[in-house]
Length: 376
Image (tube, rainbow, N blue to C red; front, side, top):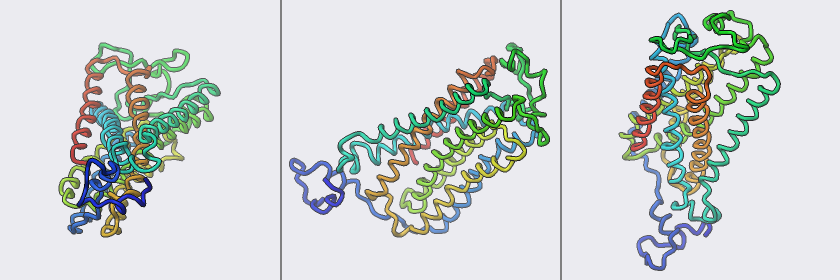
């Protein structure tokens, strides 16, 4: 059945369920129109509230890393970093994968129409997205390893908190497996604060070209993460701008939603060592996230009387983007954030108290973000 057939050969007020085409029934049930119901002042306020809240949450971890004199308490930094990791994982499954199935899944109007009905495209798009991101990540890491023979873990935590890592696994603050290349302890090299000071010019690995490749690898992984999150932010911003009765619920939920995601974005950004010549990049990238949803809300307000988020075309675009973003965040959340930090990081802390706190933060972030999925 073509998209032009949907609704043109079917009378939803006179249906014989024993003979009706299931696709036509589903499309009729899912059909919607523009639901904008006024409250323009409240919608404009949402633009500024979300801008301020999401930007503040995004910039906080970066500000802490860029200003070591603040001496952010260790557990405050750990909370921001690992709560954000949990948020990213929950966003992938609850806020992206599930809506994608609801838009282009096999039991939807799109999924039962034309070529969309020939295959379960939603998981195929997610699988393709995960595979592409994996190949890009593996290719970049393998290139660095092969050409330079070095790894990319940096002691960002100490730069932010002022608490250097050490090898005393029984100490109150925990120890880390922090030996550098050739078994040289990191404490016998430059301190991490010196490494990240504005006047620091020497490469972390004492090889400018290698350090440059490591930076490109890390920033590429981050840009992929932000790309997926921004896609999602554009869609929810548009929907908030034209929402009907659910606006009163969506407004506060999306403020927390975007703030939690911003915390995750900022925490990952703070783990990337920027040289002084690139000191503008973290501020610009965090600012881009903070501006995305407000701009999308403004666009939604501009088309508030004509945009139909439930139309066939809107469902296709939103569903495909959600599926792509879900694949990006599933890989990034599970591999780049959780597996790399907890399983494969040779400098992970041995302190059980600290590890427990980190895990609690991950599950707290994932749990709260999953709870928000009940409303948005």
